[in-house]
Amino acid sequence: MKNMLTGLIILLMFNSIALTEDPPPTAQLEIFLSIVNNSGNTTTFYTVGSSAIYDDATMLPTTDFWSGSFSVTGNYNSERIGWDFIAPSGGAEEGQLDTLGFGKYKFYTSTSGGPHFYYNLCDCRYVEMGNTDYPTHDLALKYDGSVKTFSYKPWGSTGGYTTITNGETIDIWNALGAGGQPSTDCFFKFIYTI
Figure 1 (cartoon, rainbow, N blue to C red):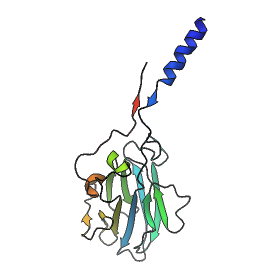
Figure 2 (tube, rainbow, N blue to C red):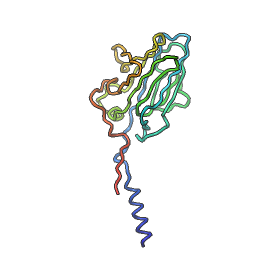
Figure 3 (spheres, rainbow, N blue to C red):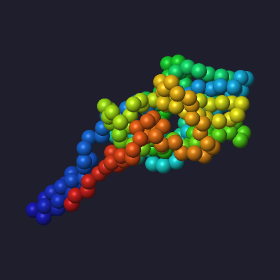
Figure 4 (cartoon, rainbow, N blue to C red):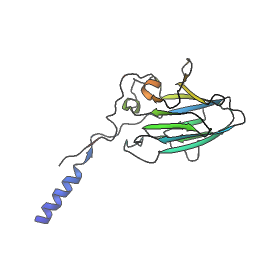
């Protein structure tokens, strides 16, 4: 009887650790990269996590999407290279994509003295499909090889690009026009009851 009671208590303890809700379905972020003034040069573009990185399906911390890279020769202006939440197997059907999770990433290049910046993807409003705070879920990123700078604008925007200062952090809610304060309650949300 004592062993059965002990077993029941252990079972109840392990079963009481639960997610508070199912992870929300996630938007499929795409960062489209265009490259200008880079003729004849091959540039490698890198990402590396600079915070906890969360899996887009479970919203739990992961190391699966910690870092990545791809190389491009010359100029490029299409929708076939960039970053995505869909895990490509050696690149997309055409072009090259690297896979991201949700978190804060450092973006940089192989160019000596090249630029770097941080992109903060931690906003649950972005993650939630159907959330109307975000007018778009896509970012247009441009690399200028002659001056070694990155600039961005919301994908589809008719406005000009905003130059990114070397070392600057770009927050997704500002870059894509959601504004306000980010929500972080969907990340690593557990309840422990005993």
